[in-house]
Length: 422
Image (cartoon, rainbow, N blue to C red; front, top):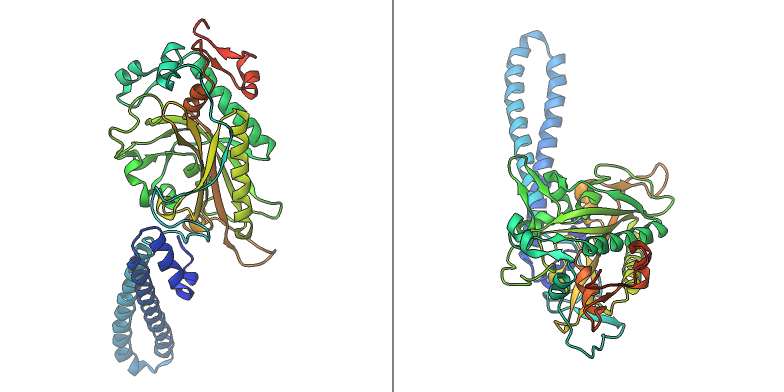
């Protein structure tokens, strides 16, 4: 959640942030009012409790013949204290609800507006020029027997699939390439749980703006994760971590589940928008003053992966209204999809500043023996199933084969292309 002291001192900054996100600006005033009510209720409770303690000492020291009358007063004061405590608790809960209505404070440079109001930071690579009619990834995947959509739908329903043969191997090659890069950059690999408790899902902010995307297991009161970011954010929940040696960086490999609510009719063919996929996610805990620089590093690592699989792409600065509640800034990288003649998102990296850490209780000590303070958290995608779409379409050949980028060949037994014959 947000820094409450910062909210009190600079409420206009939060109003501007909510406005840039196309969010509820009045949420700021409701939170301020709830904060004032909470503090007033807490002050009244603490004052009455102090009076109760002082009066208790007076009763203990009173002559025997006066104690009976004083005990009656003590009982009445105890009831007042009990009532004031309940009111303080209610006010605290009301404040908690109100402050969660405010999304993370956006950073300078984030464009205002919604999904279509992003700014393009750069375009990298040349779009492929085919001297033949290119096939889309569905036609390529079916002709090369890389996936089986029909049986995926038969077994599990729409937007499910089987990766088969070289398709399965290609995904594993991609994820292993990404994992090796992450390890080389100092990340610790983790295979994460894909079922989490409500406090962890809520702590990441996904129940605020993406709750309709999440699979809820009602019988267990748990959630399936749509990204290993959730489990990675919860890894150090309610802990004081040591950042003296630098950021803690983790690379989480997991299967991800998304309901794709509201996407009816969008990308219904193929494996671009599906309910289940695999992903390698980078996640970082660092000091707040290093978060912006770390965000640029995450973006650079994503671009290195795109270069390794030889894809043309662009980088966009996502608009405030498309950030989600936790991110203060997000950069997306989008690969060129030839048959759609447009860019489609492959990765995103977000700087969540201290928003998630405050909710999850992840802290560090800036100096030995000093007061603890929330860390900053960041995340970024390094590879996912969706990348196969861009790899197949951009590297297809006239004979129906798909050229394998050189960086992936060592993970595929050295083959240079997937051909219909193979």
